[in-house]
Figure (cartoon, rainbow, N blue to C red):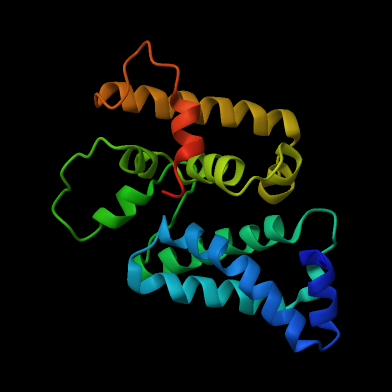
Length: 192
């Protein structure tokens, strides 16, 4: 079985079957990324734009990381572009949460306490770190390349993101203060 990277090289050389295989393999993961951040009607646009940007400049993929890490990096920028375009908002991924973005134009939302809602209340950077590590299976190094951080910074930010999530879940009664199963909850969750 060819790797995603080998299939991309074949696709770039004109092999449409290889291109279809790349899309078949990676589409669900890119779709999950957008599903956790956008309204249902915007998900398809985000996925299509991500693959379009990949194919517009396939030579930008250096092969230093896995193709999925590179593709999720593109997806991150597509997401920010979609949000900026939809809401004429200067988005700061370090401070804005998906929940805050979804509240634009609405008069508040009921507080929800499940894992998904607690995750959505985190900053986009925290969400990205947790999703890339736990659900997409990227290494600390790959996340660092994608988010332009060194490995130790990734580890520190990931630790802090988990702690913020744990605190939020305890505050909302979704996890007891003594409960040390947050990581198990994260690993079980398919997507947020």
